[in-house]
Amino acid sequence: MSQLRYFSLGGYKSLLIIPGYASYVDSIMTPMPFDMIGKNIHELPCPNIPELLDALDILGNIDSSRAIIPWMASVKKPLPHFHEKAAVVSGTNVIQGIAIALNMHHVSLEGMTGDTNTNLNAKAQTALKLTKEYHLVILHIGGCDEAAHRMNRVEKESFLSRVDEIVLTELLASDHDIEVVSDHGVDPATGRHIGGLQPAFRLYK
Image 1 (cartoon, rainbow, N blue to C red):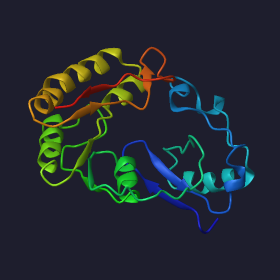
Image 2: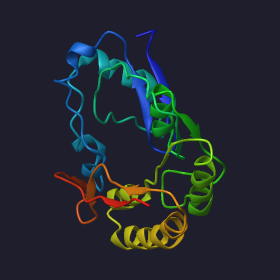
Image 3: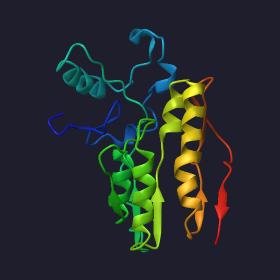
C-alpha cells in the first residue's frame, strides 16, 4: 500500500487511488452519501476488500476525529482530446480536471465554487468574455445538485431563482447560441439522483 495516493477535491470530496485493484471495481460495496445522513457510521456497509480496509485504516489514523467513507469505485479510462477550441468555467475541481484531460482551457476565479455560495455574476461574465476567444464555452453550475443532496428544497429553489435572475438574464441578453442542460436531476425529498431523460433549453440566434 506504499503507492496509495489521496487527493482532496475540495469540501467533502476526495480521490483515493489504489494501484492494482481495478479488477475489484465491480464488487466493492460502498454507501451513497445521501444514505448516510442521520445514521451511525457503524450502520454503513464497509468495502469488502481487506486490502482496501487496511488502506483506509492507515488514512483514518491520521486524525481520529474524521472518517473516510468511500463512495463509488471506478477505473482510470483514457479520454480523447476535445479537438474544438473550447473553454470551461467552473469552481469544481473534478470538472476542472476533466477539462484538462480533454485539452480544454479552464477558468476558476476567487469566489467560484461548485455549491450555492458560488459567485454567479463572476461565472456569467467570465463565460461571456471567453466567447471572444473560444468557439465553445461551458459554464458549470453545481449548486442545485448539492442543495438537493442536502435535502434542502428551499435552498435549491432559491438558488435556481438566482441562476435565472443573474446567469440566464446575462446570457440571454448576449448574441450567442445558448444551451442549458443537466446530467441528472436530484430529488430534495430523498437526496437521490433522478434517472431518465433530462429537459434541455436551446436558443439559437
